[in-house]
Image (cartoon, rainbow, N blue to C red):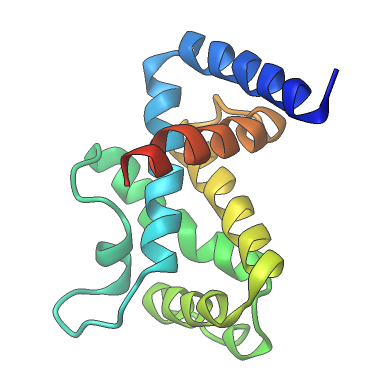
Length: 150
């Protein structure tokens, strides 16, 4: 069996798994990808605060509030930059971390964004998504659902 055949079979199994998960987890995975993409593509705008700009406006208010509260904590815990460590304002922490992420290159940036998307999806799933499931489900969703529509 060739490597391509093996990978195709693995992606097929993950798709089958993704199709069978509850709708609330699919939504959480989608939110994880969208927030991460918004961070990746964020352009500083005086019109809105950064958390409002990167958290999708069409999601449930409870999840939106949870993300507003938890996202700065996650970004702080990732220890993205020494310069962000002394900040206490959630907006300032988020803005600093986003700038650091945007300044990263290649695989390092991809790794941070992937980890961040899994953590955001876990918050949106309210504890119903494990890290290990999130890692491969978000990767599959990003490559096969999100990128296919963009």
